Image (tube, rainbow, N blue to C red; front, top):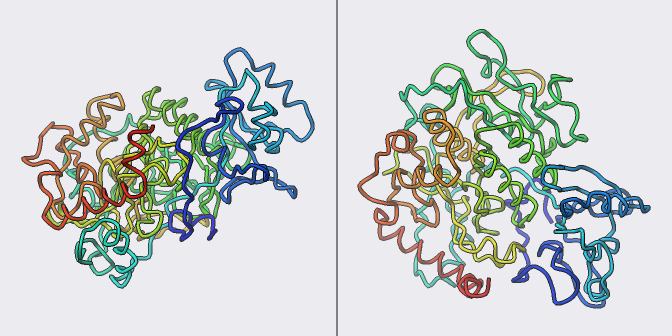
Length: 521
């Protein structure tokens, strides 16, 4: 595998996944990802993305135990070589380090009813894997088109797909936050965002003048927390707790909540930021840490949750955490990934039905915007990510500017600078604050399904883009707040060229088992 932090742009293929969780042997507690790597006679080998610990490379797992059975789980933990790493008691989820044999993974173990997977007090076991931010892109020219369009022409039967149909480097002018806010209808709305809390799960956030309120106090909340280093300390104990060595999380937070003067003002310049460091300085983290950060954000009452991160592999635990968040009233917004040439399909957890997946387009008015060549697409066949079909049909929900946007940040050393980045990581905070945050600040708490409906119904169509590239179109705060419906939907507004790409991607997904899976799962 390539660099861990480049998982969304790696060239390695993801193996075809089993179609269903469970087996004829043992219990159905093992998720499809936990089953990955099984082979009769070989036992089980952790996939490349598994989180491994110590010199013996022991994997870790997320366990859900049944209500009232914490004591029985404690008894299992007392054996040697089993270690409790973290726990969220409200959802009965625990992260443990243990061998695959003790867990009971492997066909022979399941046939014989061995291991934790066979215990009646266990509801589910998911493998803890690595995830990362959607690595910022260095835009390329259209010489990449041959690799980009080969699968569509070969499997999609689309004929010639021209490179000017999507945005490459020459189509991406350097722009500002003011430009992005203009194109997403977030200028001059007069919405008071001072009561809003936006959680940023990322590589940390460096505090600075762009996060000061009107009296000079920081809007970075003391409940901000580090989940990478044993989940301690919080900002209440140490102001350096969520230092961002990478710069990625600081960019995301500034896009959301910068109070700098135009053109550098963020979408919600008075909002509080709950910084949750779940990725290290290289931009990598475990799904267990990310899941715990999601649950913590919900427990802290965050209104919106921005996650510019993901993986080509599905995590049942992370999907469950997102459901926990939406049930608690927190709205998750997630980048769809930057690997359209290779893994192609919407990354997890943007592919979850409990998250709003955001694609990247150029920072132009909706009628002129182009889909970014790197931005992952749908419809997900559900066969390439070990989801057991859970991701089948997933597409981006919405799009936002994500190309060469300049944002003011502070480095880990305390230096103020302007950072120009490109990627779906940049589009996600435009939606998290640009539509969702402003909508909630305008109207108060809304249910997840209501937010999605408002956002998609009132999005501005992008005629040059396909539905499978941009979902309902460009996120548009003014339309969503005023409930002003465009004359055409994204599907109706597509040009002939966009329609051709739309059908090509659908056919490609079907060729990878998408249509078959619709009937099996």
